[in-house]
Picture 1 (cartoon, helix red, strand yellow):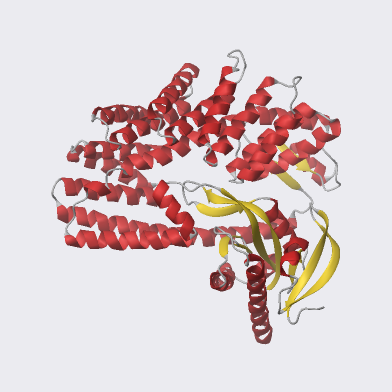
Picture 2: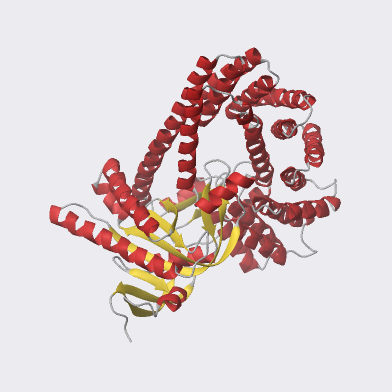
Length: 607
């Protein structure tokens, strides 16, 4: 037996793609498929790779029922990754494969996954309508209730988002009853979290003080469960919320005791963001006691912790980059074998877990922060510090989000995802990045990347482009959003050429000095995208759609030192003075087939 095949046979629970191209067999398909039925995500990106293998095999077998379920799982993966348009696409693709001869739970799973995505898009009425329709069809004799819990969870969150607190409360209590009946302690904690958060919101909305008692009761239940399960971060949040509740009850001594417990665990576990919030609430508690010096001291600690948090994020980003270099080196040494890990826990129930935590974080933060600012009466020095913090937060927010989106987020507490009909997307990537990582230390490599990306940021800002993100050594930006305009294609072309020239100048300097240098490929494509905010922690402005994928293919199908544009972009800029184009004809693009492409350069336009 070959070494590759021996490794595959020993890798229990793993999917192996053999170097000789051998495909998945019936037994392997059935085993892997069954594990997806009975397990939950661990890594959505890796799971998508495995699901593509399953889909290829099911397509060859013309197994439409399996294809329905597989596309449902792909929908879940894309939702977990924040790729909402892809999530909806694969959800509806799964529905097209489903027929009356398939397992009814497959239909329930597909629809439950779609409610999750619609919830992320803020389509609360649609979430409630779908959940009600399929909950009415639910058969209590079915062997798995994970889809039912997903329907209930997403419905409850949608109700709360609509301000229907009583209905949301009733739905979460139903979830708590199911969790207690099944003996699922984690589901019980999640339900208690959310019920407590709703009572806290009702109090902050001008409700009776008894709502605080109810909230405290459920937080205590959640705390006891969290401690028994060893859920460290949740335990910190529970203590923090108990501190907030006691503060709102004006029992400041007890509030500080809870906050002390929260801070000890948060510092030990390096939960800097939570530690910063705890310090802020302690400041408010001391202000309530009339101890303004202590209040001001903890407000300063809050500010220091926020600064530490930003520094920590920078260090972690560099650490992640270093890890990427090492993994790329190792990857070249084991090219003969690609192994995709399967998940170990309940995949369908991940949807429920994710949404429970999502709501608790969202509402729990409201419970923690709600009412702080309206009752702060600090001395002039404290107000000055608060203003500095506010200005710093405003600057940080605008560094993360477009101004228009940031304003919507501040006004509404959320920002809706939008379909923008015509956007021009730019992708860059450095040739030989992995090889260069072997010649430079991680510190030197990150320094060079920082110099390049900082310059790219300035070029984009000068031309009105929106930087979307960096992914390793790749850079992504777009023109024509969040506010549509008619110059986006030309703007992006000028940005691409300036980026190309900057890298070329750097290459010339490095060559003269005998140093390693970057070379860049740049791809540009124009089309519709969905744009919006992803995440509730460390959220970011992102775009999704086939346009993004095609722009990436323009980059990978290009050449170093060239700006490669699609036919769609060419149609918009072909008559622009000062640009010249070289037709490349039809070029094969991975996953897209043959596409018309053009190189663009500055100069007089060819007749």
